[in-house]
Amino acid sequence: MIIMKKSGPVICGCGLRYGIWDRSSWLTTYFLFFNISVYQGSLVLSFYWVFMVSGLFLTQKMIKKTNEITIILYGSILGAISILIFGLVDFVPIKLIFLAMNGFFISGISPMTMSISISQNPNRAGSITGFIIAFYLFGEILFQPLLGFFAEHLGKNSIIYIIIAGFIITMILSFLLFMTLRVKNKTRLIISSGFRKK
Image 1 (cartoon, rainbow, N blue to C red):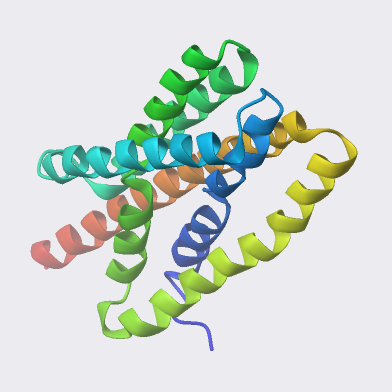
Image 2 (image 1 turned 135 degrees about the vertical axis):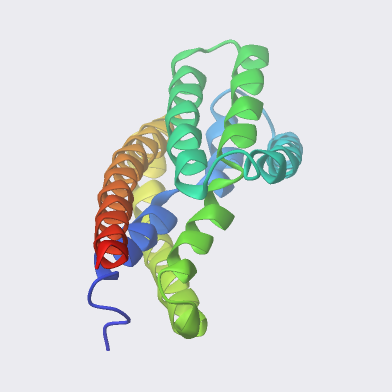
């Protein structure tokens, strides 16, 4: 039951991108390494999500001037850079600044990924949505025990390396998705112009 033969790579790419992108629930465990209590870490997590919500308002304005995949690409790059700096510095106030920046930059990725996926075949929106959510759940199944293993055996601070790796992978997937859609759109324009000449 492949949803679309021609759009399969795009939808699968979106699914992979969706499945890897967020492991923020582990931040409370990570901050224990810096002597920040679970309660304080939960407040930090709420702080992070506040910036994600504020970033969505910017995404709504940006979508009028650009397109979904451009927002995903630049959001992925800036998100990867900010989470890398977050992981490298030990001074907690600086970490919080770059964590907030990360939440702000990646906020539009999830809705834009879903939008691209559904646009491949709007008549199968329900099936595509289920397909993308399945990828997200698969990501949870894969990463939860992996992060738990790292936290228990390599230390709570080791969690960040998995999160950074996830951001780098999703940045690469975003670039590949960007190039795939670019080629697909160019092909569509060439075919449509050919029909016009006829």
